Structure formats: structure tokens, C-alpha cells
Length: 274
Image 1 (cartoon, rainbow, N blue to C red):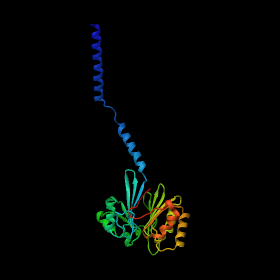
Image 2 (tube, rainbow, N blue to C red; image 1 turned 90 degrees about the vertical axis):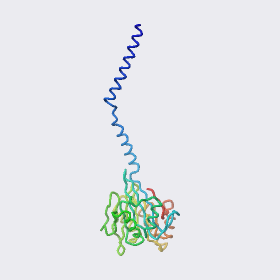
Image 3 (cartoon, rainbow, N blue to C red; image 1 turned 90 degrees about the horizontal axis):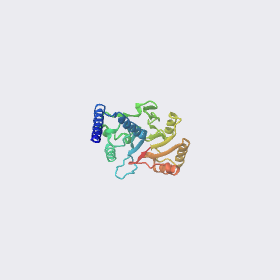
Image 4 (spheres, rainbow, N blue to C red; image 1 turned 45 degrees about the horizontal axis):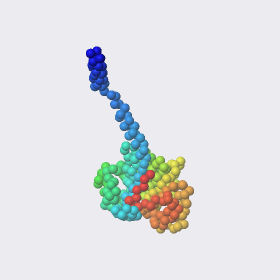
């Protein structure tokens, strides 16, 4: 009988402890404040992993790299720079016509409404012809033309214009100060592609030049002239080149011979990830 009473007492005591602990949990629930902090930390790490990554997509050019797309005489590229949770999207020049530009962008799944601003290198029709179509989709879009600036200027963090260069034809080029070095994008390089690179180096004397991309305006130049320009690129320590548009076939051939694996075949449909 005594043994039975002891067992019953132990059972009653155990049930009492169980209900008491359950009651305490209901009054004082577990502290979950650490959970959001863990998720936030993971998010920040993820953002740091993509911070500074850049994609340059040629959406209009007379050289073709993707058979799904259309070509036309002119140049335009879409620059996508990841900045943490947000991003910065630049349309550099707009090619010669809206129909080709918008068709190529649609096929490459680029929404014009994603563009933060348009950068126009110079006011020739093969670089401004598609602007009207872009502005129809996004009427309030900011457009930077050469006359928008009198000299080199930081447009936004790590994004610069060389300012208008040249005499007869005023042209500006875009400089992106990336984690790998300077990325210089040219429209037609009317002021001289070497002069544009030198100007970029004046603005950023301590930064290496990672990539020069775009129209070099060297179609019809002699081999002697082209080799001198290539030598100047080497002296300026340009690491990679991606000439297209008005650069000319022979220019591309000689740059490819010199730069080998650091030569990037550029044309409409090309995606360069940096």
C-alpha cells in the first residue's frame, strides 16, 4: 500500500512540473529575437557577394554574335551593375532605330523600364536613333548628352563621364571604376581611342585599365596606324579589348593577334560579365 502511494505521488509531482513548465512558456514564450538577426546577416552576406558585379550586353551593333537578333549600323549596350539589394542599369547609346533596339532588348529579356539613365556618346543618328522608342516606354528617363557636361564628372558612385572631347565632333565616353579596374566604353571614338584612354587615365591615375569596349573608329586605318595604336594600348597597360561597330575588320584582326585570350569578340548579343 505504501509503495502504491509513493508511485502515485511521483506521478502527480511529474504532471505538476509538466503543466507548470507549459504555463511558463505560455506566459513567457521563447525569445525569438535572434532569428531575424540570423536571416539579416545571411542577406547582407549575399549582397556583398554580388556587390560590384557588372554585365555589359551589346544590344545594337553591325557585328552579329546571336543569330536570333537583328543587326544595324550603330551601337548600343546595356550596362547592369549590381549594387547590393538594388542596382544600376545604364543604356549607353541607342543604335540607329527603335524597332531593332527594342526587338533585341525584348529577345534578351531586358525591360526598358529597368533603365536608370541613358548615356549618349555623341549626337550622330547611329547612336541616337533608338532614343525616341526608349522614351516612349519611359518618358521621364534621364538622358545625359555630351552638352550635359563641360568636363569630366562623376555621374553617380564609380560612374564617370570623360566629358566632351574632340573639336569638330564632341563626344563623351563612359568610365566605370570597377573592382577589376577601369572599364571604358566608347561610342565611335571620334576624338581618338588612345586620347580617350589617356583622358581616363588622367582622371584615375592609380587605377589599372581593365577593358576598353565599343567603337574605335578605325575602319580604313592602315596596318601601320593600327599597330601604333595597339602599341599605345600596351603602353597604357590596357588589359582587355572588345572593339565593335566602326572599329573595322582589320582593326579587330590585329587586336586579336596581339591580345589573344584578352581579345573579346564583340557584337550584338554579346554578354560580358565582370
